[in-house]
Image 1: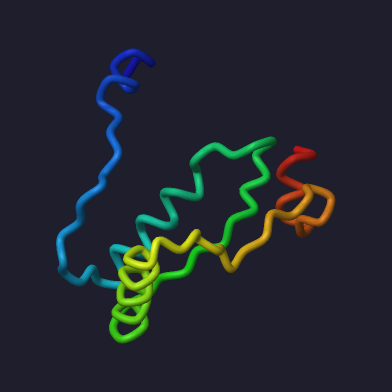
Image 2: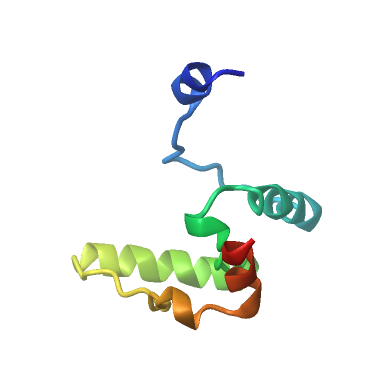
Length: 94
């Protein structure tokens, strides 16, 4: 498939169904996503899945903070690439 076709078919999802996804499907999606590009092929991300009560709590907090118009506050800080682990640094070197 050429770039123009890929680019035109790309879309972002902003609405989601309220249904469970089995762990096998989530694992497969994660494995495939690991092949996506990143700066210098570092791929320094970590993936977390939230389900059940944890997901419910996240949704409630999101609605509450959105209603209060609070600025987002990520639990994750942005590391300098020199602080990344060996896996990410080796990917960049390769």
